[in-house]
Length: 464
Image (cartoon, rainbow, N blue to C red; front, side):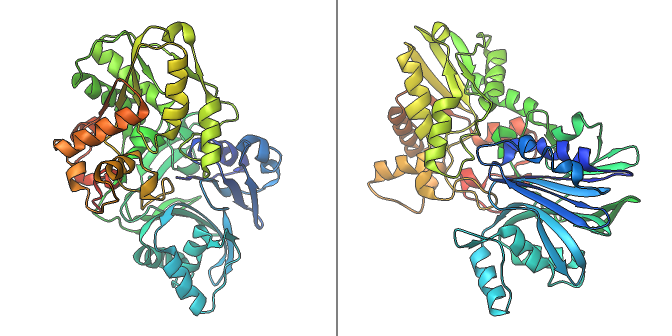
């Protein structure tokens, strides 16, 4: 996932843009960029792998003069993309994943288009979105046409002389929220970006809706779709605790997830703990419900390390997992501990680093409680796991079946014997005392939205 931010200010927008974009640093770690419209459109992009957004852009942003700007922390491609088109010069940032990008790129090549941004032989998905948009009769029309052509998801901001065009993907997988402060306007992926900048939420952009934001305010250019399939994982893992999506706060959802885990448990333990960071609040909820003390046998050394879920290479993920978590031996030794975590994706870092560290410090029992069901399918709508073979649950299924199988419905069924065998295989592979996953209905209940309004594809394989 990437994080995008935009601002319209009655004066200079740079400071809002700089800090508002920086509040999305937990969503990406590949590239970051800013674009500002003043007398002309100016853009800055930096590679932020192994560095921080603030240090890369601290001097740059002061020289980006203008009253309108957009920014991005990107999980994959270089952004913003600047286009000189029949609509004039504009900049675009996106959040999502175009699953049929190869097919669309081949069509554009045949029509004589070329791509200037290519990484590892693959087209830049933001540039691809821009190319599709300029085939329309206007920017809003081009966005609608792009929505119709792509498979996957693309939420975006387009900065032009008219203002900032805001478009949430047609099924609403990724959020956009509009805020206001006096005569200034802003739009964000994460509402936590508004808190310290003084913006108040005025609108949650709806799926498929297109809005033009400028100094005169908001103007709807396309009405929203009825279908909403916002990503459930935003609340479970991806989102920042202070953020809200569809009016529902992330921190409170994670507390409720932890409470559900405790309600379905009956083990004797000494303390409750979370795998930092996002597992921490799930553990707080578990402790609140169970009455067992919450403590921190694992603490995270945050500076300089990414979220281990995000880095593109296995080598980088392993390094982050090894270095960022520090065990507190005096709390661990001889204890029976429930560890809550948001999910088990690949399971390799959990097994090779976290659990190994706990055993080296003399832990008595390790009970893992996971806030969502087993991940079964790679996400089609944003950057995360890109292959089935990466997933811990699929490794378990292959081991139990003796081969890869395409129909895993019996393993998705939480009440089936095969589901229980899969979970026990993962438990033994990790080397823990017990392992339980959150039931899908309990997770949905903790979020507090109707199941049909949530994307649960990575657990169920069901698309909208």
